[in-house]
Image (cartoon, rainbow over all chains, first blue to last red; front, side):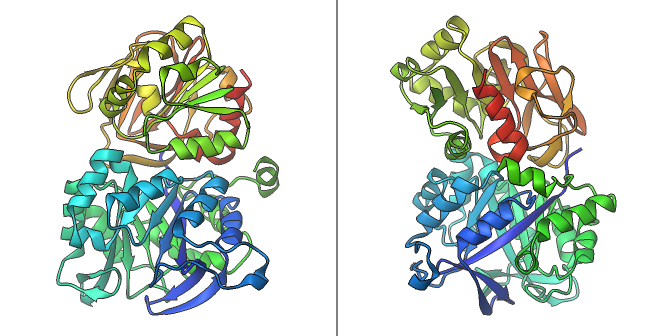
Length: 272
Length: 199
């Protein structure tokens, strides 16, 4: 049987891993190298890297940290792809086919489109035709405006009057292979996923849906897995403790959830 | 030397990175002459059957590929679409001819939720060399909407269930095909690639 996926999301801002709260405040967590080594050997089913830098500078600016600085997102992708043997998705600042090709060449298995979905929807189709729909993930940031009513925030920041479910259907028709749905209200709050939002999204499209935004404890993953989504993603919760993905997966597996059996940590260390 | 065919497939870099952890002796194959030095051939693939077949034909690789694999019997590993094109017929975007090394047809999966994305179990029907150290029900990463549902010769080795069963590993002598992505399947994936390279 196909397993439901647990996906750590890593937010990169100017070359550093950060934590986000409601898309507004950011806290620095460290270099991408350290994160990638932790997460890839922690039974992650996939990894999503979202570049949320306001500028295109990736200099870490910390020569005292005793590791190399990464000047471009290209260097960061290359570095991550060499160490990760799970599917890698890169998102953020993808506006042209050139942006897509660069990520692919350096080892991305998928890319996500967010603003481009509204600004240049033809890019979704071009990309899907050229590289296959499995390569195209559409990321939608939704904000609740009243009970069961949501609008899309472009790039997580600019309000629109677009319905996220309709947008997802359009994306599906344009050739998207997966939808990543994020709740702006729940982002970084740690109080659980917006279960109505993610379930309704899963019912709106036939392609797999990945839920993001709100995980603060393991129970929240259980709730999300009980909806129609194919995968559950989270950022902050995985950054705070050692072996967090392993522990979560073990917990879910032992409770009978349809997730991939965890691989013994000792065994994994030997293999990778 | 391990030859990996680069015809512009989306997962070439991932396959290259994964094989690099096992061997330093890799050759990227982009033209017919490149087959000469290699002992093993890997054909990565994502995307469509038709797209992959077209590109391999455009690069004039088919004749040398057949000579090296069917004639010289070099071990061949086809990944995802690289497995699918071994069939004689693909039904993605109309009826298209494959390499025809395996008596089979590539058809769309029936499940409502497509593509079939994520980790799924393998059901081993026959234990073969490239599965050494990999147990029944081990999980591998899949991304596909199409698959070989049955084969008309005895090359079926492993099946996977997604509402219906499809063939996820085939073998015919030195020709191997896997529907999943070993390059993205962590330890079991690396193990499978290692087994293949050690043939």
